[in-house]
Image 1 (cartoon, rainbow, N blue to C red):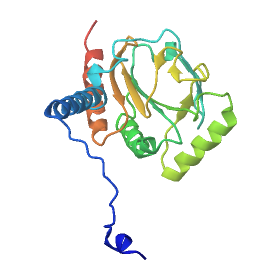
Image 2 (cartoon, helix red, strand yellow):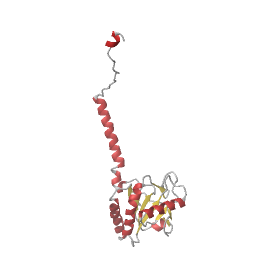
Image 3 (cartoon, rainbow, N blue to C red):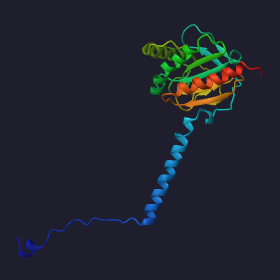
Image 4 (cartoon, rainbow, N blue to C red):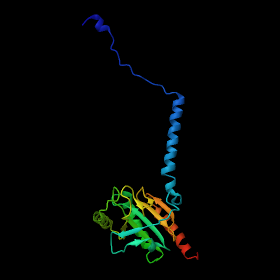
Length: 217
């Protein structure tokens, strides 16, 4: 090895560095804050108020529900007229739905004997409605047995396959979704997703609508 080779220092690879200007940093923070605000506004705050949900104020012009479990009879809008109705839309594949179902069963028991109140549990297949009723029936019965609850459950055969629409009109995008109808069939509250304590809110609003039934129109 020559003297020149021995004395030549080892060259380190050049590291490229960039320096963010205050303006770039400020812009990045502003964008992050804006995105965070939009996320909270869309996914957090509205969910906590069941009176400010997209379905509130809408009504059904058509509804046909067929029983999946027990010996219940088919239901139509005529069967719901003049009653306060809580509709819980869920799926066997939905983990939050499994957490909520026992509380729906307890809520139904608390109003047992009240002819003017009806709680409807609607089971939906994963991937949209495909018409395989027997598979849906078996999956639903299996889950209810696993949870040890008695909850008469229906399905909506008229829902679109691509996205679930109750009665062909009310769009259900998140599971579970619970809708509270007044005696005129108008949605007065909507709970999107499940959170502990929501059933207490439901009971309070149910009570308000039932009290109105006692008053003359």
